[in-house]
Amino acid sequence: MAKRSKGRPVDGILLLNKPIGISSNKALQQAKSVYFAQKAGHTGALDPLATGMLPICFGEATKFTQFLLDTDKTYVVRAKLGERTTTSDSDGEIVSTKEVNVTAAQLSAEIAKFLGESDQYPSMYSALKYQGKPLYKYAREGIEVPRKCRKINVFSLTLDEFDKVNNEVQMTAHVSKGTYIRTIVDDLGENLGCGAHVIMLHRSAVGHYPADKMVSLEQLETLLAKAKAEDISPSTYLDELLLPMDTALVDLPVVEISKEQGVSFSHGQAVVLGVELPEGAIKVLADGVFIGTGEKNADGHLKSKRGLSNQQEASE
Image 1 (cartoon, rainbow, N blue to C red):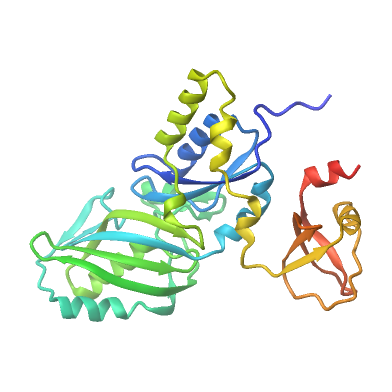
Image 2 (image 1 turned 45 degrees about the vertical axis):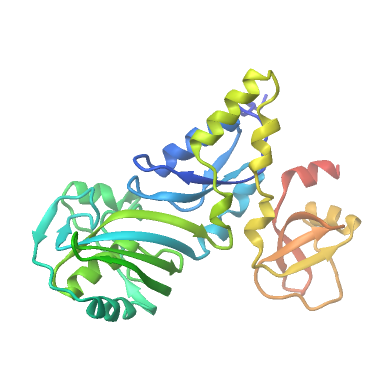
């Protein structure tokens, strides 16, 4: 007999406002516990120092996490000039201290140089893996390992504040996936000749998701307690906070098929539409209902790429 998963089936996306001081995985596990969900995953880790938007995908939504991992992000970052650290943030040890002789004009000029495409080497304190082990574990052991340079794109980097008294700079960065903000800050400090490190980092947006849709762990706990006090199912309040799973796919082209074609699609059969299909992943709706992602096969027909399990079960 197959082992039944602990928890209830929950499908959707929660925009969690991760608090400072805990890992993304810890935040994920707390949210999963509140929802008593069978399955959950997050879409792009934030350091314990960082706060902000951490989309949590529940249930069937975990099939589409890659689309959120691949999307651009927006951050508000505050940096301390004059000090360089081992981790490029305030969690590390200070390795150099220099006098800050920077004007607002010099700062703006250097910030502008980061705009556009460039190559960036990931920090040794990142969660990227080398031979199955996170880089930050090697770094803590004092071991330097090879890292592949990656292409990044800084769409915008604006100077929001320059506090000359405390030698602090605040910026807003809109960047492509895989961009390390603390590496940008560290490079900025080196370019200015004084060093710099991150003292605050907040992710305000992931793709198109707005900041005002974020929910804190405290808010989730409050709703859970309210439901218990009223002796009703917590899902009454909690599930209202979930966004539809296909909101992760807003940038994909959409193909609509009939309910009958949707049954074939959900069973892995190619659907002949008689129209030219776009290349790459396609968001598929059957009679207006999202049933998964598809792609064009060798014959130019629509085939399933990521289907929803409950759609297949419903058609049987």
